[in-house]
Amino acid sequence: MRNTFISELVKHARQNDNVVLMVGDLGYSAIEPFRDEFPDRFVNAGVAEQNMTAMAAGMASEGYHVFTYSIANFPTFRCAEQIRNDIDYHKLAVTVVAVGGGLAYGNLGYSHHAVQDLALMRAMPNFLIAAPCDPNQTQSCLDFMIKNPQPYYLRLNKAGEPNLTETDHILGPGVPYFSEARGKKKNLLLTTGAVYDIACDIWKKNPDFQSNWMIGNLSLWGESSRKEVISHLQGFNSIITLEEHLLAGGFGSWLLESGIKCTPCYLDTSTCGNVGTQSHLKKNLLDSLSNIIASV
Image 1 (cartoon, rainbow, N blue to C red):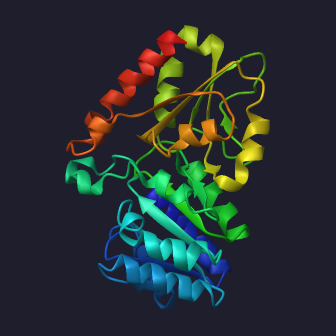
Image 2 (cartoon, rainbow, N blue to C red):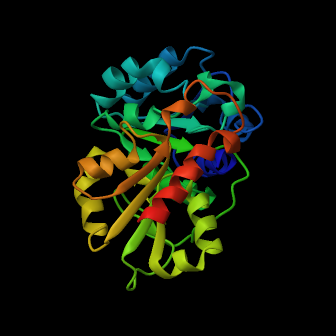
């Protein structure tokens, strides 16, 4: 996803002189195409994410669309005050780009976990969350952001993810992507972000699940899109949500707060403080999902 993000950002920067990329002294081996082509619109702020966020807000107030880029926990929790005061309350066109959402950098230690980031960022009333599930949706999210500048939180996985969605689906706040036409199926497994591959894998391997359930991903959502998502999820008897995040303040919680009856599947709090690969740390998520499906 990160490579798709950079390549698409380069394309947009060729057409829009106001596109700026800021990094917190990382991203190398991915960000070079932008840096080399637009050195005057590339800023390495150093290991100083609070300063990076404040600079981004200042440039956005002068008409730039700024993308701040770092490993997920660093451009969020480390500079939450600047995000709130400088970007959100002024509704500025800054996109906070988080690479390695969830447990993608789990083997670097729990300091690199991003399992409470959705809770933080959706508490910012003017931010929209963008959590694409594959490179296709990453491209679609970026297209939408460029056309509709405002505060965004773009939550990416890392790299090497396969395309699991079609390229021609309509993407908008509160509008889910469904893997197939709704038809007569009344049950839905709805994800946000890179865990959509888990839903696809379950659907492919389980004929009974295929016959009774649809799968989908909601990539753009936030406080301002509650009405839209309600309208798109009407008519389902059972909805299970799946996310690489804790329950508190996460995607399932957001749907429940919006008045949508669903059963959230989320990371157990025992994940916090643990170290390991992403697949190892997600085992409790898979076990929980299997138990929920079996009980519905």
